[in-house]
Image (cartoon, rainbow over all chains, first blue to last red; front, side, top):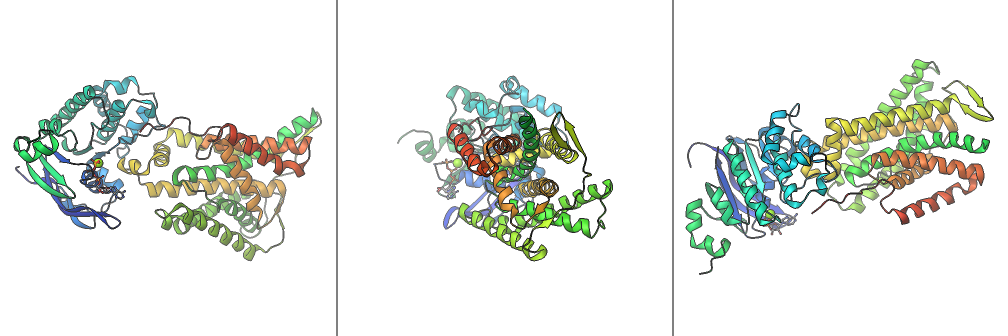
Amino acid sequence: MSGEALLRLEDLEVSYGNIAALKGVSLEVAKGEVVCILGANGAGKTTTMRTISRLLRPRAGRILFHGEDITQVPAHKVVHLGISHSPEGRRVFGILTVEENLWLGAFTEKRVDKERLRWVYELFPRLEERRKQLAGTLSGGEQQMLAIGRSLMSRPELLLLDEPSLGIAPILVRSIFERIREIAGEGVTVLLVEQNARAALKLADRGYVLDVGTIALEGSSADLLASEKVQEAYLGKKG
Amino acid sequence: MDTFFQQLANGLTIGSIYALVALGYTMVYGVLKLINFAHGALVAASAFIGLTIYATIMGESSSLLAVIAIFALVAAATACLGILLERFAYRPLRQAPRLSAVVSALGASLILQNGIMLVWGPQMRIFPQLVPQVYWNIGGVVISLLQVIILLLSVLLMAALYFFIEKTRMGAAIRASAIDQDAARLMGINVNRVITLIFVIGSSLGAIGGLFIGLYYRGITFEMGWQYGLYAFIAAIIGGIGNIPGAMLGGLLLGLFTAFISGYISSTWADAFTFLLLILILIVRPTGLLGERVAQKV
Ligand SMILES: Nc1ncnc2c1ncn2[C@@H]1O[C@H](COP(=O)(O)OP(=O)(O)OP(=O)(O)O)[C@@H](O)[C@H]1O
Ligand SMILES: [Mg+2]
């Protein structure tokens, strides 16, 4: 990794009540990178993402963006800084139309950028076909496209994607990963959480492996793909 | 036939008042999933505040300008009460179990109600006649200028609210916050501000409703918030609590319903039939007439 980190987590500790979910997580994402976080269920991946976008408050540690401490910035202001979060489970506004969801994605903008909307529709033509349809009536894959599209509307510098392949037909998964590659190609830095380790590592430059609240492993995607530990635990190659 | 049209006119008048008050319940429920039990007391307070503003600041003038000023000042004062209510009775309990918030709501309601009694006394007060007593007799059906004003102003306010919610950025923020607060935050929406705004809008509409109650029924009492609050709350449930057009529809329907019961049967039966109607509607449509029709896919 080269240059100053765009995003930097320093010893983040987060707990739910008495239960520690993150026990000192540090990681870095440089501008223009695609970085993935792998880990088993309950490892703390979603917690990490929700802490970066400040839906959760860390008990200790710091979040730096462009070198500035944003640990105390309230959630709704984080978007203004250029961090956009497409959450686990998509969380689209089901009783609003596709287009209204996209407009809300641009809430931080003075007016909806037509070119941006054009770009999102080009990335996901299915969304344009269904723009007047209620988001809750879309298929799971389409909702995922909408969640990603919506998070692009604020013109983020850093995009947080939490399990974009969750519960989606395999054929769509590939297409969604291609779109993420395209988004990164436009200069958006991506921090990606995935269960689908192989696809994620093929896409990412680097990766971190989270294990019950701590970083167990980190390295370039090639190194992680070759690592025995990762192969055993996440790529389904036993022994 | 005269009875029919007479009760139609009366029902629409009462119904608009219910609708205005019901909006306060439904908007707060929509975003906080909390029944704002103190809303009725707030509505009652607005009528008394109106009384005082009329007698002191306006020097008992009922010129058009003075009346407009009274409405504006009362709406503003009640909005402030609404903000305080949210800030001190509800916000500290946002993360607490539901029941705590309900208890707090009931407590706030009692405090408000007793506050009104302390300030304005326990006896019934007579609300000033701010609108000239003009009546039209249309083929045996008597309609007053006041009724026309109540209906028109209510429709106007509701249309404005509908436009605001459906067509503006802030309205979209309100709808998003009602659906999923965390997702709304991720859009950059300041949900706390949205909640304050909800209380401002709900309380001012309730204040207009409270003034209408004073103007229409004349006698105002410190505990009248329970009665009108309950009816408005039922109206909100009939329309589908959380649903804004639902509250408008529920209010008008309930107003018409009670008027017809009073006209054709007896006003003493209005309460009983209202609850019967509520139960029937909830059996047929548990989510109310316009309650959520599309489930969120998980
Ligand atoms: N709201 C909550 N209350 C209490 N504990 C929670 C809450 N959310 C998460 N946890 C706990 O925190 C730990 C980390 O959860 P997190 O959702 O971050 O895991 P994850 O890596 O995203 O898992 P998955 O792959 O299943 O999405 C888990 O042990 C989980 O049970
Ligand atoms: Mg998760």
